[in-house]
Length: 327
Image (cartoon, rainbow, N blue to C red; front, side, top):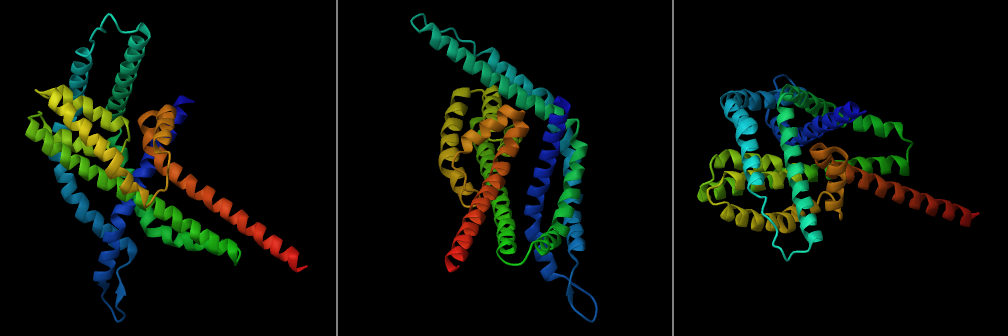
């Protein structure tokens, strides 16, 4: 059963990355199709599949060269530097409680720090374990290709199956709102990752944190994992810094601004979720880092589905009431 759950979590992550990737590439594919026409008597736009392959070639050729040069450094950082920093932080955090402190408070504090350490080590272990399956990431652009090339046709075919009238209109609105929610999530996560990565890299460089650029890039990537990701970066940066207090002060202030001002504004337009914290921790309890990553987009799609279900039945009740009154 555990293997099945892990497999489903990994498949969900690949699917989420494919959706993320397809939403990022869709504007570029549309721009290329508008600018490049097929040579012939009729000036037709470039086929969608050809435009996608052209975008892939422009991205993956330089990306492969960069990955080949950076892979040894990244592997060293993930397997050696990051675990050593976490071990150093928690090895030096066993501070005895003052004698006047209530034993219950002391036990609660110890349980809290043990929980934080366990979750951070679990997130890092997931990252290290995922490195062995990095080759499976090639599935992501394949799924993204299918989504970009055939999703519009699938949507039209699905709507043709529905009967004419209100149900077909409702199906079109449902697809549009799901697309809007996923696009809003993608834009919010991309913007949040860029903001966090750039801010952390600049601040860590000023504060003299070793591997400042690498840590900043990891901070941007781990922004995809709400709660657990920022907490992991918090410990990693503090564990490497010569002046950890300055790093802690900066990250604490930055997380307050990011989590309570910036990110809610980024995600509010596309995904109307009011209980993001509860959703995140339910995902963490169910499937760790993978569950946290999947929690928000899945909750967004379920929220859209529930809203359309309620609206559909409300309109159906009104129609039945109106037909009865005419009789």
